[in-house]
Length: 286
Image 1: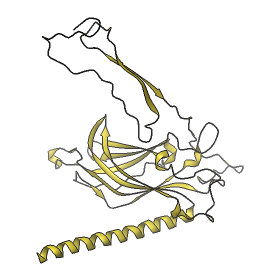
Image 2 (image 1 turned 180 degrees about the horizontal axis):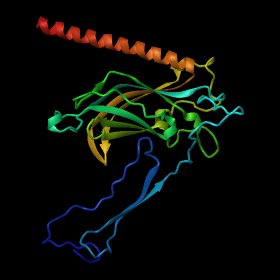
Image 3 (image 1 turned 135 degrees about the horizontal axis):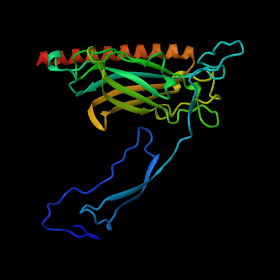
Image 4 (image 1 turned 180 degrees about the vertical axis):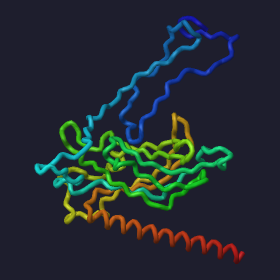
């Protein structure tokens, strides 16, 4: 009832209680901490008692990202891989699939979707190369499985904190599921937001990290398995699953890393084929 304190009008139909909903981005769960959550009993202009909350938000040091590498004395732009940072952060994304995506096309066009995934970074220069990397388009499918592996190289050498040190704090990878639409432009189905600092938390990306002669690349590969909803405007539009391998490698190590990953994928494919064949044989024997 309208009045100070907690008064209840038994003639009124019970209604929902006010609540405060909050959520942290991936890898930032410890950066928002609630310290106050309480009703306002003296509020009398409505029979609802509003809820108020207080939160401590931990701010990251600002990440400065240069749009272009600096010019050398001869006027030529230096390579993305600087002399002091011969290594770069590599991401290998595999086993990519989505399930229960929404229908985006009209019934005249089949009533399904033509999904593909854009890989978008913040800050932009981490991945932008005259466009965003993407998967192939899978036509007429609400449960697409991409057989391809996506290799991304982060140009992280241009991202520094306030002290000028390399950092991925606050950097994000957005895996945005798109629907190809030739007639009216592609539509956004939803996005999975991933914290790059979390994906690379086990990697040493400092300038003093060990040289390639002292460290084997496969000893420093971080693997993260993703299974999370595809979100748009706070609502779920299907699920995405994938495996992300992160490594801090030289150009030579990157080639070895990709060859090893390709070899492992072939072995897993043969194993799956053998397993299916054995199951079919067992079924026929029954």
